Length: 140
Image (cartoon, one colour):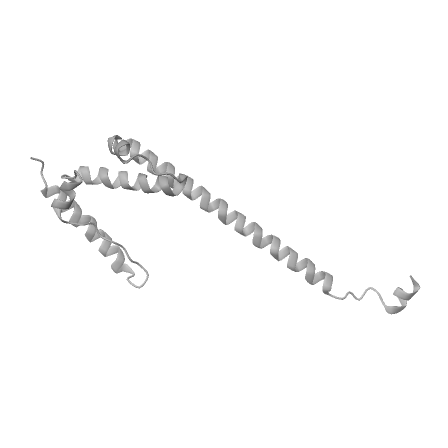
């Protein structure tokens, strides 16, 4: 039988870290903790701390792929992947999402710059210049 004591300790440590993070700024931070019922984890095939890490990484890749690429990968295929490959996939998803966020921010800035330039052009066009007098206009 696998050692479930390391799983219980891993769950407690993760939850303690999460709660400490929230406690640093409770009016601005909120987070969920992991279920600490070992029977729950046994139902999904997780009985050790290493299996928990793998399962949570599979979850991260599954949700990250859905968010980044718009489809849900095969859960069973992800569960069969190595931790190293899952980490590579998670990093790839994070890199893509970061690039997309930066692209969107650049696009939003470009739109703000264009709007400002337009507003400045309209303002300049509407501002009377002292260059022409009525006499100058009549003589044209």
